[in-house]
View (cartoon, rainbow, N blue to C red):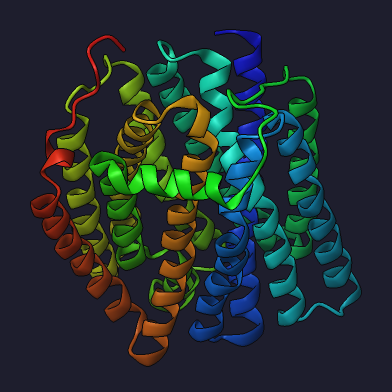
Length: 397
């Protein structure tokens, strides 16, 4: 593995661990201050707003300027937000509006970070090595996603949420150091002018590509309905009778499943029938989500959430490979931005949907009905987009 890929993966690990640590801590913090599923769901809308406003612009920026420089600049607002939340919590003037403001600032920075980071990898390793690099990258991120929630649960139990915010800022700063040692990666169309037409070109490409559009739509709708992460504090404390440590274990178990799947995929040759494998993975994810929602035993909850994570990890690998290999490099940043917008919509709007439904009914109803909705979406997309079912990774890759 080339040194530049190690630096890239190290940066991804630090940023990924910090991101999941922050998201889990914010949910617990808001729940502790308000005990309101509605406000927990509102976090998703707060984070989705800057994603909707800036992600497509971020993609155009990634296709115009040095992607490494974009990534480095995008780390500065999160460092500032982490420091602000640490001092506000330490001095006793933290509030839900302040937490929401910090979450908004971080999401705005990620709108520029995510497209540049996704488009950075193909230029770093080349097309032939890309499928294997995706597995390495996905496994690295999954390891980070396990580390972040697990550490935040332990840290909150031992020293409070303020320390999580300090660790968050420190990890982002370390990611910035790794990025600074990477070589510049110019886009294929470097030096071109950004314009609304450039953004429309990427949107048009996605609409004309059934495989790319199918991957993005399936992921977005499945996670909007099937995501349970927003309600984990309620499950950990009120339903399963566990505290912040139990919350950390639950939050990490999803990613532990993804890690196990990633490690398994590293031992296997690239899966050629990516379309059918993706559909199978989403189906398992929906069933596991229903089982998790119904569980009242902590070990069973951890096991079913891990199975959901294994399915999600397989889905991520198949989806990322299909999208990137189907996209020309000159528009890869913008198409990655469209993909990131879909991902943000699924994660944040899914969190909002979970919280709002739980506020009107119960956490159990929200999770179980969401898992069923995920299966319904899968059936519709599988029937409506035959190109996705038939998609195979090209044999020359």
